[in-house]
Length: 147
Image 1 (cartoon, rainbow, N blue to C red):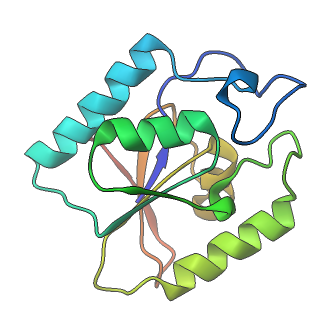
Image 2 (image 1 turned 180 degrees about the horizontal axis):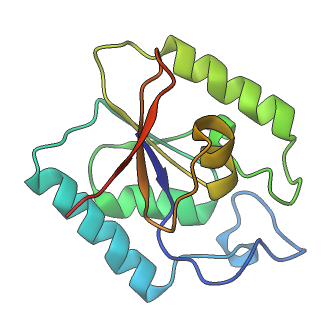
């Protein structure tokens, strides 16, 4: 399952952006933090459990994943945003596609990432906090609502 990070006001990242330095990034708002917790709670209430949770290295993604409190979060460069060319698009997508191919078919994995990454893999657009179920074998994508 792909998830776009929770609400982080603004567009893109500041020009002084540095991976791993949250002070240089666009971060979750108070509303975004609540949204992340609420989505995590809704998934737990529905009995949805994940075998693994991966996140982009961007703080708004790792914060979203951690606030959901579903599993320990593993940072994965294949989920990083190539929107402003801070990372190379081709290499990032190559890493992600390789990871998707290697995921065991009998597991459920959550990947918290960015709009551009989700769009590139699923051909679907999602708002902040949006979820897309993605079948790694058939490459079919379906929008999911956590209520």
